[in-house]
Amino acid sequence: MEASQELHLPNYMKDDNTSQETNNLISSLPADKDFMGYSLYNYKGCWYYPNTLQAVLDVQDNFRPQKNDIILASLPKGGTTWLKSLVFALVHREKYRENPQIIHPLLSQNPHDLVPFLEIELYASSHTPDLAKFPSPMIFSTHMHLNALHEATTKSSSSPCKIVYVCRGLKDTFVSGWHYKNMLHRTKMDQASFELMFDGYCRGVTLYGPYWEHMLSYWKGSLEDRENVLFMRYEEIIEEPLIQVKRLAEFLNCPFTEEEEESGSAEEILNLCSLRNLSNLEINKKGTTRIGIDSNVFFRKGEVGDWKNHLTPQMAKRIDEVVEVKLRGSGLIFQ
Image (cartoon, rainbow, N blue to C red; front, side, top):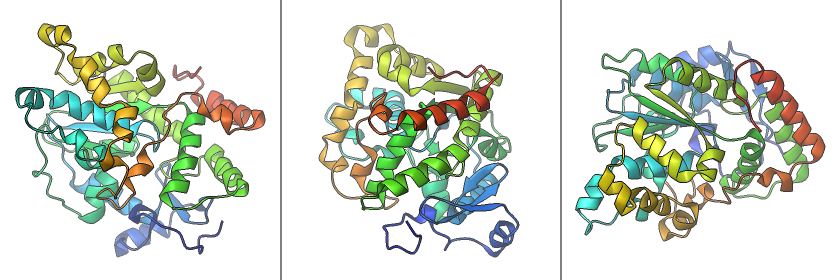
């Protein structure tokens, strides 16, 4: 597929919002193309589209999180929507439990509008966005590597904020990303495009890639700073949701009380944030989010092992071999 082919293109994939300084930087960076022919540039080991790189640089220059802020990090299609829903419901649960007449925001707004992306939304539209308009504690989201994110967070004058990372198996992440691309660009891509995307994925040439380096940055961060960086696995949340949501609440310093345990508060949150519930809401079926992406793009199967329906044995073996080599010795293992 050629880049010249007319597609619905989100702003973060474009190159029309970069400063002259960033253009000069881009001209000096290693370059490649994604499977559709759009240019990617490697900055400090990570691949970006021009507008995304500009926003990342603005985050690093201007974003200074406060101690009570929460940052949710993930790979694209790595469990982002679910994590946003769970954390929003957890930290704001008292407010909506005490005021049952208020419609819960997750029933009337898309999770991505409740928890904004730093570099895809906030700093994509402004070098210095107004962050005070969001309720406290402020919850932000990012796909940035931890190393890139730390260039902003370590400059903050306050104590470190909490960072939660959700990690999903790379084969399922790839397949979910493929379906997302088709829905995002409002088209149906062919098998040749699928194979080109797969090749770029395995080479690490994809937005925010290489994905194994992304995972490793947060894995190592969680080992070095357990108090402020939590590493979660998507598959474990699927397998043992109650245990994992309680673990998440403990990390965010909002553990469930004995009364909440008895009343089933954790179960209520899991039901509210379930894919079945969220995907059936009108707000998530129609319209677009604030960043101009169709709301229904973010909801598909959410299953573990769906890659078996799409990848050949040879493809699965190639990803497994790449992951085994790249993660060797880190302690991070995928079954």
